[in-house]
Image (tube, rainbow, N blue to C red; front, side, top):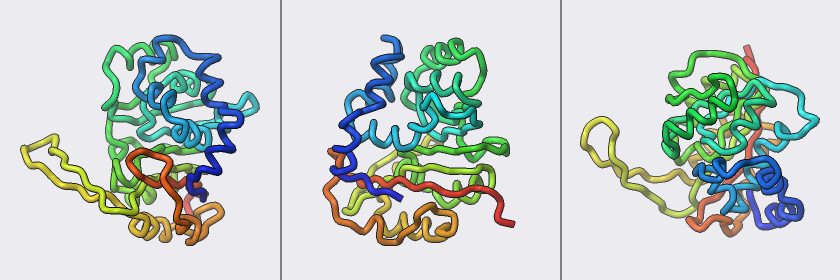
Length: 233
């Protein structure tokens, strides 16, 4: 368990591996992808990306079966799809069909599922990653952990919460209602995590209690959590 802090970011920026990889390997077309733009513009996003995906990007990494939940499209998508048995389940809210087809054509295999993860057929993976999805893009964190922890050896999540009142007005995709959604805070997030504390690597209920200023303009806090997977029964 790690809380993103300025100290952790400063340490990462001494090398900034993700920025180097983008400079060395990616094309001008990759630079037009929304997630790639975000990585270019945000050092904290590069830090989180390195914490979650860095080992998979290493030349020494063995080939693994990877499920990426909500990871979006960037130059790293094709990179990961060639180095690993990589699968991405993502609504593709930030991309268009042309970008999706180009990525698939360059990878020579069908590995992207533009659907809800809840509808994904059951399979087993070496590692499952979800970056900046739970609980404030998708509040089904508990359901996700119940469904997928038994289906992997390792799970790595970046979790986002707000320690002040933060809410959004959203419109249903079916129907005409407008909802006001109150974002989760630290205590809500940790209540779910505590249910799985025996699976959390380096679990400590105090890890996220440190009062630190946010690294993001919107004031959100971000924690990195790794879980041991497998069926406990």
